[in-house]
Amino acid sequence: MTLEVGAPPDGASNSLAGRVAAIRDRIAVVARDHGRAPDSVGLLGVTKSQPRDAVVLALEAGLADVGENYVQEARTKYAGLRACKHFIGHVQTNKAKAIVDVFDVVESIDRYEAGRAIGRASRALGKPIRTLVQINISPSERYGIDPSEASELASRLREEEGLDVDGVMAIGPLTRDRDAILRAFERAAGAFERVGGATLSLGMSGDFEEAIACGSTMVRLGTAIFGKRGVVQ
Ligand SMILES: *Cc1c(COP(=O)(O)O)cnc(C)c1O
Image (cartoon, rainbow, N blue to C red; front, side):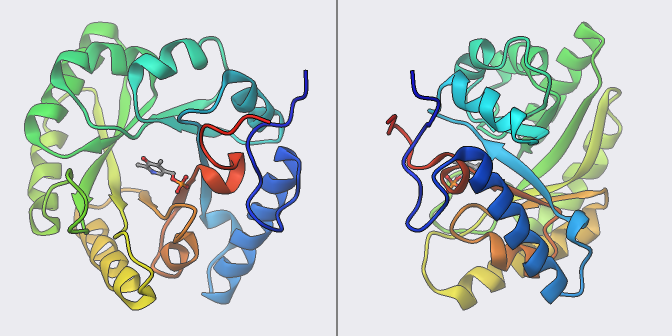
């Protein structure tokens, strides 16, 4: 069996470890360009629709953080793996216990009911959970609270025992207009300042350089690391 998973983006190294190393180098260069310490930007590997083998390879390549959108998909894929596991999908309150059981960080709290359900599950399972408030900065995005309401939601959630509200997550707009992306990311940075915490989870494969320019402390990369989803060579 070949351990190579996914099709590499054009010109990228053909091995997963090589791609992770090249991305880390690029993150460091962009961070320095904006007067930031290279280690101030973390790398989260988004493993959705990738097989467990790919996750194992990524962890061997030094990745410490991995993320999934669906709890069902993550449950078997992540079982027994030592990593910090991030839930980045929509929180359905009836799945809160399963989410808390599988994951360490829930990045996608976009309404009070979702946070309350995660808090309740956290207390029931005796497992503290780090959370982020997901804000909406893109017309094409379905989920996320309005940035102007983020700090109020964070304050309410901080009254819940077991929920460590550590910052903000956002998905950038689906556009090639770099200025529009930067404007959206500046809004996310503003919300992060008001919410407080240590984590601004911002930037995906197509826009992580703009995200770092705007203060992202964690980029979430899927295709840049693993190649196109659903392509297993
Ligand atoms: C899929 C996904 C990513 C990664 O997207 P890529 O474009 O493959 O890097 C990051 N964040 C969220 C919330 C996602 O759903």
